[in-house]
Amino acid sequence: MTMDTSKIPATRLCMDDTPTSGSGNLITSGAVAQALANASKQAAERAIADADGNDIGKTYARISDVIFYEET
Image 1 (cartoon, rainbow, N blue to C red):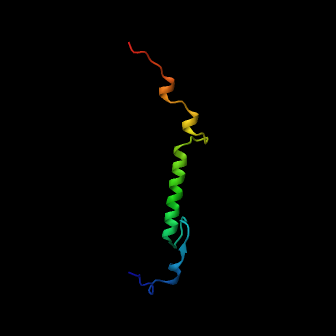
Image 2 (image 1 turned 135 degrees about the vertical axis):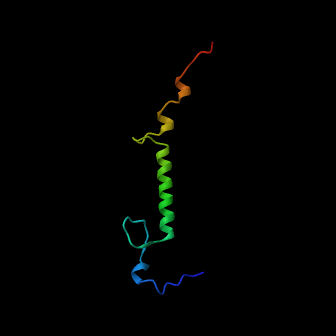
Image 3 (image 1 turned 180 degrees about the horizontal axis):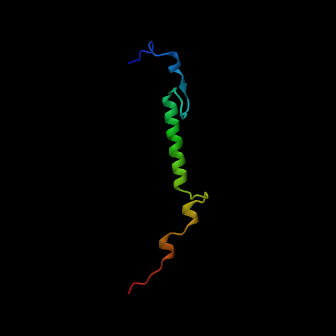
């Protein structure tokens, strides 16, 4: 199904290739897909590092490594 664009003003047919705050232009689906992919990648990178960029798994000890207890 194709959309009839004959009644849309020409100024509305401008497309943004990246999400842009305050833009009155339409956005392409590729731009949305790329923005989501970038956000997912950034979230994954933040999930494995602390605020200083240290790898959490290699920098910090696990609780089981530092807590020793004796059962009585």
